[in-house]
Image: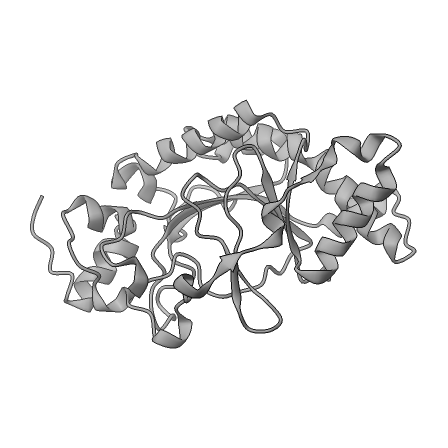
Length: 277
C-alpha cells in the first residue's frame, strides 16, 4: 500500500471519505497517531475518567410483562424513560444467538475491502435505502468522528433482501422484525402512562421510518482525543442499541455529569427519542 500523508487534510479527506477507506482504512495502513482533523475540541470530549456507572446498568426484565407483575415492570419502564431516557432490557424476545450473529455480521461487513464497501457511499449507492460512510457530516464538522457506519432503511422485506449489503442483510432484517414486538410493547406502556391508547394503524404511523444502523469504531491510538459519536439526542421515536463487549456508551445527566451504561451480554439498550419525549 502506498504511504498516505494523513497530515495533509485534502489527502486525508479523499482517502477516508471520498474513496470510502474510512477510519478502518487509516488504521489498516499502520496509522500510529490521531490526525488533526479527528482531534476533538476539549469542550466536546467526554470526561470518561470522571463518569460513573449508571443505574440503567441493571436491566429491566421484560419476561414479567405478560404476567401478574405487568404493572411493576411497566412502572420501571416509565420511571426509567422519564428520569434518564435510557434503560437496558433483557428477556426482550430477541435471542442472544441472533444478537451475537448480528455483531458478527457487522464485523463481516466492515472487514470487506474498501472497494466493496465504497459502492454504498451516498453519492454512488445503488439504492437510496443503503448508505455507507465515515462520521455524520464530515465535510461540515469541526472534527471528524472516529467511526465508520452503514445505514439500512427498511421499506419491505423484499427490498431489504434485495438492496441491503449481503454480509448482513438477512441477520439485520431478522433482528429488526424480531425486536418490533418489544418496541411496540414499550411504546404502548409509555403512551398509556399519559392516557393514550394506540390502535395498530396509529402505532404504525407513530413509529415512522425503521432503520438498522451499524457503527464500527476501529482501535484508536489516542482515544482520549477522539469521539466515536458526538453529543446528540436521537430524533426518532425510540432507538434500540446493541453494544459489543467493549462499551463506551455515555449519557449526560441533568446535573451535567456523565454516566456510562456498561454492556450486558444479551441485553438491549432502549433510548427514548425526541419524538416520544
